[in-house]
Every structure is written in C-alpha cells, then in structure tokens.
Length: 480
Image (cartoon, rainbow, N blue to C red; front, side, top):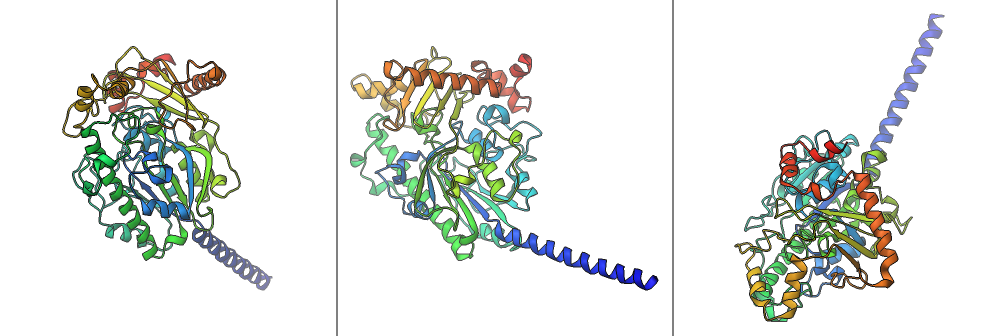
C-alpha cells in the first residue's frame, strides 16, 4: 500500500513538474510574441506641414521612411490641443472631463491608472525620455530615462540616446514600452538651421497673415521640423542597431498643431488633427494608409490588446483599433470629440466640437467674448510676429480677415475637412448642409451629457484652481 502511495506521489510530482515547465515555456513564448513598444511624440507639429500630409516647405525623409514601412492614419485626432490635456488623454485612454485635465497644467483625478500600470500588469517596464507633462507622479510613475531634453521651452534640444539604449537592453526577457517625448518643434524655434529656407519662397498656410515677420518665424519652425525628423531617424536607427526593430511596435505622432494662430489652443482641424503612423513588422502593411478615424483616447486600449491583455470598456473612453492595425477592419470610430477651455492661457473662451471624419462642427460657447491666447496674441520674445499682423491688418484685407477669424468667432462653425482642411469656409449658413449641422449638433450635445460636461461654466479660474489643487469640478459636484 505504501509503495503504491509513493508511486502515486511520484507520478503526481512528475506531472506537476511537466505542467509547470509547459506553462513556463508558454509564458516565455507569449513574452517573446508580444512586441516591445516605442512611442515617439513630437511637440506642437502641425500635421499638414509634414510632406506625408501634403506639406511642401520641408523635407522629412525619416518620417516618410517610417510611413513607407508602416500604416499611416489619415484621420487621427486628439481631444484638446494643449500639451498636458492631450498627453493625459493619450496615457489614460480618457477624455479631458473624465480624467480631469480640462485645462493646461493640472493633474489628473486621483485614483486613476495610466499606461504605466496597465502595461505593468502585463509584464512591461515603461519608461519616458524627454518631456513628461503629466502628473501626479504616483499615477504617471514612468521610469525616468535621461538623454532627451525635458524642458520644452529650452533653447536647445538635447539628444543623447545612450541611456535609452541601456533602458532597452537592460532585460532581454521583459518587454519594454518607451516613450520618447521630443521637444521639437515647440517654441522657441532656436534649434536647426533655417538659413537654407528662402522666406520669400515659402508657401505659407492660408490661415497665416503674410508678413515678413511671419515668414521669418515660419522658416525657423521648419528648421525645427528638420530636427524632429533627424531625431526620429536616430531613434529608428537605434532600434536597428540593437536588433529590436523586428519585434518593436513603433508609434509616431505629431501631437497638436504648432504655436501659430489657428493651430495649437484651437479646435480647428490644424489644432486637433495629428499625424499618426504605426509600424508593427509582420502585422501592419508597409506603405499603407487608412481613413479609419482614431483619437488619442483609443491608443491605450489598443496597446493593452497588443500586449495580450483584456480591455474593460468601463475603464476607458477610447476603444481598441487593433483590428485596423491587422488589416481586419477599415473603419473604427464614428465620431471624434474635442473641447477647449482657455484658462489659464487667456480669458475664458470655452469651445466644444465633433467630427464624423468628413464634416467638423464647432460650437463656441461664449462667442460674445474676444479670443485672446496670451502666448499668441501678445507681444513677447517667444512670439514676435503678432504685432506685425496687427500693424498690417488696417491695409491688408487678408491679414484683417485672419486676425478677425482668430479673435472674433461665431457661435457655430461647420467645415468640410476633405475639401477645406484649413477650415476657412464656414458652411453654417448654407442650406445644403443643414441636415449634417443638426446631426452633429445633436451628437455633440449627447457627448457632453455622457461626459457630464457642464459647458461654459467649466472654463473659470475657480475650476482651474480647484483642479490644480486636486479638487476637480466643484460645479459638476453641485449639479450631481
């Protein structure tokens, strides 16, 4: 009897060891199968200034090469064209009202989780090099990787990838997610060599006033786009040198538009539309493009699924577009949503908007106010061209129209982004577009209700100060 028991115990032990070995091998195989992740973020680069989206003034061979090896999204957006809100959306998968970052330079709500925790649960180590612009630290507890400039208003753009290499190669068995958050082409436009750009030969975007000072600053901005392209190319070469290219999913995004009137700090297409490329060797089709509409809130749910995790829909405003990456679907979301609260960047000027991918409806909640953004519409060292607009506006009709467009806005705006990507022709008064106007207006109302967004009252100094102190949304609490 004892002999039989011993044999049984021995057999169970052997089976247990075999199962453990099999499971361990399975886990190791799964870890080998999931990709590393490299997210490269530009800083204030207007998407259609890049040749990939029709730009004609500057060459970006590294960005073009990445696009030739991956999937380019024609319709990628972020909800709020400011640095802190858009990064909070990217890292939490939530819209601004839900994550709490409805203004620039405030922390997310307490108790939230970010890309660090979600990917950490799936076995990833997650680091960030360069600009952070996300708080508090306990939620965005990235490993801090040195080597890239962190100060976006520095007059230099430090770039030394040695510590990025060390982070990547530290543990061959554990997948990594590394955010390389560059500071170009954020103002001041002081890096790169603008001398080879002839200011007189530049094709200025039509939403800019054509003054000598504008052309001079615009070529400095283009020089920083060249630096952006160089740095992106070096990051890609780093992966190749380390033998990591084949098993690394690379995302490049241009963030919001440049700090020029009509781009950053606006809900216009050139503010909230972002360049977006995904290269995933063996998964995304090289040199392909998609009209599937995505926005930053969708990125984290996608990465969770890429990493083999399950997405709980109630945790996110975004949804995974993994099937778009794999070529299974050609569409994703039906609508993308946007908001703007102007405080602390200027006096209150709340804006909400929505797009179905073709038409973009904008509602200015306080159209009686004059729009002032202190970094754009005031004379300061970082912005030396606005005074030339004001001086030129009394004798140049186009300049006057662009100043008025920026500072005095109607209650409603409607644009066809396919034919008017710079959004200069407002279709609100055209009978042909009244049905789409009503549809998008109703969709915007529904989104604001779903987000419990009180609208104009949110754009106040009191709400901003409460959020800075971590006490979000007194108005919303009173409504509830």
